[in-house]
View 1: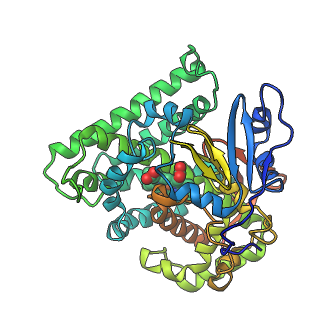
View 2: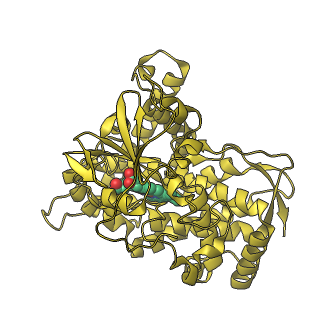
Length: 453
Ligand code: HEM
């Protein structure tokens, strides 16, 4: 295994990805089988160059090079065509802002994710996870993807807006969010930029869903401003209360709107996908499933899980960490250089695109022994120490590391424990799943049979 300590004069291996075509470069490989293609590249070098059409793109495969990119957010900013296409949807929020503005925004949004507030959001999570786990009928098949998305949409909507309007918001978000996520992805991968302008039914559905989400957020903001509730304990209150330590500034209504939209798009599908993968993996690994049931039974003794139980739900957390390793929802994210720089001894001109793929990193056999096997105990403290620094990045790193990491882990741990306390999730015979590398790495519909325990 590689160690975190590498000699300062290390010789990095550069390579050009094989199989490039004259005009398209590697775009066809990326379009057809992006996961297999990307995962084949570390074998060629520590820094691999590929071309998507005429653009050269760089994939750092070694954790040290990836860290250099992530911690140097000024030189490796989020940018490029994908971000430009996201701006009409997300406005100017944490995901779309440039480096300088991002620091200010992050100072303002961070308090909404402090530990004390997560404890309050956890009350919503406890209620919703309990409601989800009691809603199913024994032996009636369910689509786990659908259920997990509905659950995380309810949790996130209620953590964001704890008003009487929340049930309406939940229904609206459940309806609109998948349409917006799917449309945003189609636009992101359209190299011509023309698709969004065609009079297609899919575009009309997308425009309608986006308008409805925008209106919903505006209504929630108006409702908050029209009330004299003060701090309701939800995310929206924290955003209104936020004051910048450095400048004393607060956020405008439009800025709050953009942050809320960003949180909806970043927080719901990601957590739902990872939970779906966790059930899929447990369904194929009876030993891990039995260990999960044993822990949940021992800690909870048949009652619903509470936030205070989380430290004792250590195996449950390891299951989720391992699902995030094998199927990281944020399987690919990008950076663009703002100036000439050097990466692994290679000169990169300004506006070079750099791809970061946790999926590739997490399946590199030199970083994770037997990378394909689902082994939650690789996250036992004594074994986790062996994992080289920077080689596990489901939540990214540096100043743009996921702001919702603890929120997502808390929500997922409570969801797994609540459901595993009641149900054994049986795979439907003959189910075949192929990971879909879209906006997040989803499983698509996953039919399973809940059997009472
Ligand atoms: C298992 C669940 C989740 C995963 C795997 C995940 C993954 C990630 C990753 C990899 C990034 C960094 C992307 C980059 O560097 O370009 C990120 C950023 C972000 N995530 Fe998450 N996320 C999850 C849950 C959540 C939740 C629950 C929320 C909010 C409630 C959230 C909100 C955000 C936001 C706002 C950003 C942008 C942060 C910034 O640039 O400052 N995420 N997420």
